[in-house]
Length: 402
Image 1 (cartoon, helix red, strand yellow):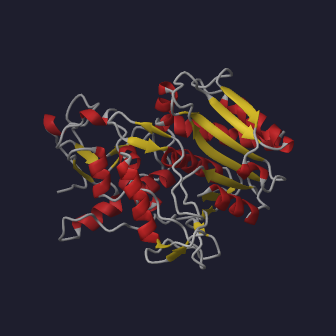
Image 2 (image 1 turned 30 degrees about the vertical axis):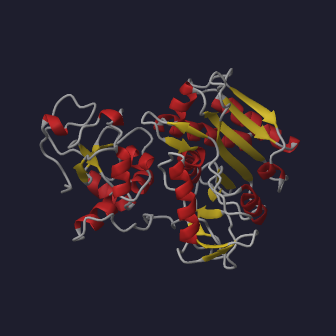
């Protein structure tokens, strides 16, 4: 049985990192960089609910938000599946746990708000029904493209090779392939237009600030890979890496950690963001559709295969007019103590998503090498993800200031 607050704890339910049972209610301890919008998205609730549970109109680092909690079962993956969410999102709800392989059954952990409430209101022990994304109190929720693309399960998909699937059957096929390769994260649903053709996933985020330094700018943010090939329906996972538990986590999944942080930062600085993800040709089409945007940023994770020594970050541009943006972003990222001048570089490369609509300043950022242990630890670090997004945003501001 889950609880809205816990007032006492035994040694068997003390979370990793706690030296003694809590004397007051437990919950989520606010981390540096947390915002009400970010936490509302994490816990599947609203910003107003976050403030209400925090008991304050402003969030202070180190203070506790009273959130739903439940006893840990066997693994973070099992808990995430129970609440119909990705494992990395479930782990993010519990920053007090630094090593999930050591968490004992019965440990009290935070769980998402709406999924918890659905579970409590159900007489069944089955997985709770997925709930819609949180509605922002002051800004519109991300809007899908005007073409009314939909991931409805029974929507027909017509591939170029002549095969026909439904949204759910193609997703099931992709998950079957992933499972056969020891990849536990469920692949996303394919996005389909009114004609049954696979297209890019596009969401529009309105600015949260009307007076920020990026006011009036529209920036396309692309999470690399993660789409379905419109010709044969195959899923594009990108590179991959094995975590401590021996599970293979794919690049597309990690790219979204960085783009989520970047979107939050950019909109807070006054920018309108058009998020895109999907197969490369579909992302190209989306970029052409929104070619009046001011900038295009694509986020990826690199890999050098068996060469575990290669590390660092690379910012690619394809046309000379984008070199200035690449160099400015490089200079900003080099200020991070984990990166430095010797790790970050720029390079010119003929990449499809950068060459299309080439008049728009466009770069592709490799955030690190998954084949390098130190880089991988950074890529999986929520602090690195947040810091990286902050520095990319600052680099964009510097670019426009110049």
